[in-house]
Image (cartoon, helix red, strand yellow):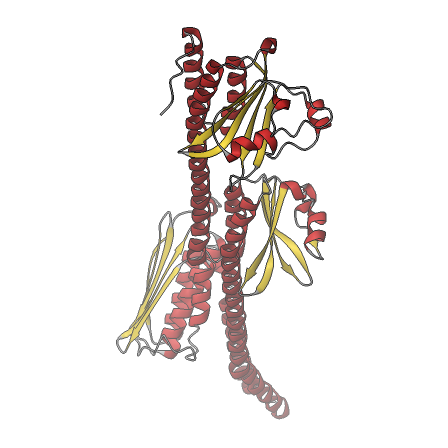
Length: 529
């Protein structure tokens, strides 16, 4: 409870009430302390005022704030008092203390050199929730008069008001810090969640890197962020966001963290550099420009970097697997064409050579005519191989005519009925989509005719504004889609669909095979003629 001073006049009471309202209404702790000194000096008429804040053990002064002592005088005095002598008396016995002549008190230690003269003294404790927090010291009342009981009562009231205000300010500060900590935790969780989602939803390395630098920059409110990845015996800048020095883009650096900082223009007081480590393996570093460079930001970025490293490692692993699959598919394709050329074309040409040699020896023109017919067959075969490698119709006429030609050749050369249902836009689709659809249809049709002994095949291709759906059904004998050694080219199909972020379904049984692919279409690419 705040005491009521009986000896204060009405004007002094009004000033105390106004001071109390001002103190309690200030939620900034430093502002409360500064205001307390000014109000206490004003109400009591003291020339000098000081506030000593106790340490955690309440045995000595940890801080000492003053009013009325000039900066140059404070520097001349040197170290602030720690609570001995008269000042220590209030620490040992936290009750008001009023002295008319300070030097005459037996507890006085005197003043250091350069200290201004002080005779009258008034000290009152500042108690927060019944425990000593500090002491208010007042000296040199105006006119050389000693401090009165009314002054003491006013100081006690001010100390009580100050205790409430200090406690409120501390609670508010703690609450605000907790709020800031919570906000940082939320930002970290959001950024980490985004990276975690990227691991499952995004496998393109460049997209993951862009996401990391964007999220990392927002997390620590940085001016710019760059990510560096291992490149041989050094590091290479792989992505940036925001404002980074001009020389950072595409830079390659070697050496330790100090050399990296120097090479990238990282100012220690305004930047944070943290490692990207995945399962004990260094992947690179994350550099933030224009941050507060404090412990909190570094901890945030370190925690974020751990998730970022997982995302990078996962994306790199997927890319390596994709590249390995593409290389295996290419090698498989090369092997298939080698078999085609060896088993059919080269053997046919070899037989033709023997036939021509025999015709030359026998001067048999009829045999020469047969050889010419065989030569035309081989030329047609080579043209067929070339069409399979890269059909001219796909480049010159588009996807529809190319698939129609594919179906016609399959029907003409084999005992199979091939029907097509094509719903395509008047404009050309993106080149990568057209090639993928053609190859998927081609592979499914080849499997049906050559391997499944199908008699009927239905090809359906339907393009909308967002996707192209390719569907091939046959009545052949089927196969096991899970058998990676069946040689049906399923790896190539899956690879093409995966590269375009599409979906592929393959079902097969003794009643036939069904291949269905859905490939997304970029609106930007659809604008091309």
